Length: 279
Image (cartoon, rainbow, N blue to C red; front, side, top):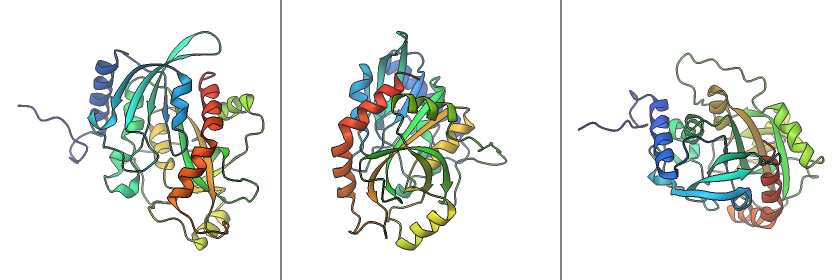
């Protein structure tokens, strides 16, 4: 009996598990290859309903290498969706309704497994979304912000061994320009990823600001690194769900994140769907 490759085995090539997951998705969906992938963070889940016709829906935990989501606001399913583009052509989107966060303790390989699986299905463009804290008073809860660059403050990398990947344009400028053809007023900024799960202290937020951050959160950066390793174009969009610690006049809570995401959900979901139909 042959044992399936496991991400927990350091001798296993994580890309082998990604290819196994991609084959599983192809078999379950009947779609041999996908074109674009979306990782839907807090507040962004409604976008899947607006993209097009759902071809298939798979419980994410059934896909090789994936774990059941543990964070409120994330959906436990992965969808294959047929997208009718603005030019009349058809593409297939792989929509990951949840992600594995570094703070969950499942290891870096699982954090970026969704990205690597998407690439293995044939995806060439990935859209990474999140809910985050904002450092600017002008960006009130509900404001979507394009990610221009990031600061990886986790102290870790998903790359293994002597793997050197250029990070000059982690977030593809062409895709940010395309997003602004849908909404010309979209601001952009630098996202700082902390490990979590505790929210950042006011001192840490000030530090991130000194380093050039405009947004702070607990995801996305490591996924973007893995996406660039796979040669994917990356569009990152944050939803400001709260002002960061030391800027917000009230204590932070996950309930606040969910509330802001729910309030902004219809508007940002429509925005995201319109952008994806142009990709």
